Amino acid sequence: MTLYDLIAPGYDVLLRAFYRPFRFHAFEHLPKKPGASALDLACGTGQNFPFLAHRVGLHGKIIGLDLSSGMLRGARRSLARCNNIEGFLLRHDANTISSDILYRQTNLRAVDIVVCTFGFSAMRSWEIAFHRSFDLLKPGGIYLILDVHAKKRTLHVRAVEKFTRSDFSRETWHYLERLCPDFHMEYIDPSTYLFGGRAFVAFGTKNS
Image (cartoon, rainbow, N blue to C red; front, top):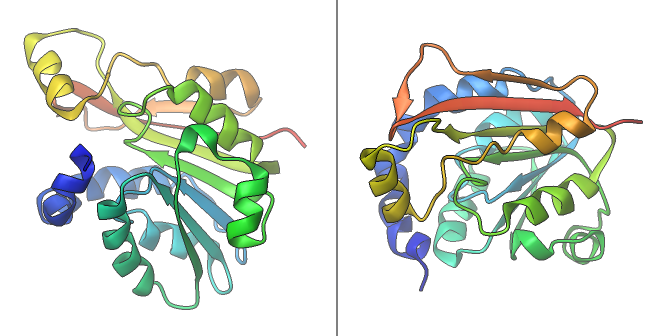
């Protein structure tokens, strides 16, 4: 049983309201694409699903991917509350996701949107997960990252990192910056500090 399997039952109660303003701010940067397909990498309990459903609209598709079966149980409930959305949940390691695996589960080989929120800071080999998921993005598709970054390595930051098995020093937007000509990154105002780090959103469009 993983850490996230253990915390899954109380995850939404503890953190949904806390993270909601940051998710709301981040998804405001994502344009509406009716009928689009969206991959939510490290989807957890599906807290992004209502925001994604609003963006992909009627007949859109949401694909939630996570390695924790406990988190996916919560994601299944979140998906059920999204009307007129075709949903898929994949229990799979983001480091080994591929178009073939995606196709076998969803009949899709690529998606219009990829999002990863509060995932890369806690993910092992996050660079591999990023590149594999970026490969699944259609040309002209949008990639969005919401996470926490800490410039200062305080004892507080290190304690939280140890407990959550995260690394807030990662500048996980750099690959996106290199790959997307229209790249944009900003720290979320007001300058609220989360566990010693600042929330940021980064996004860009894949070259056609």
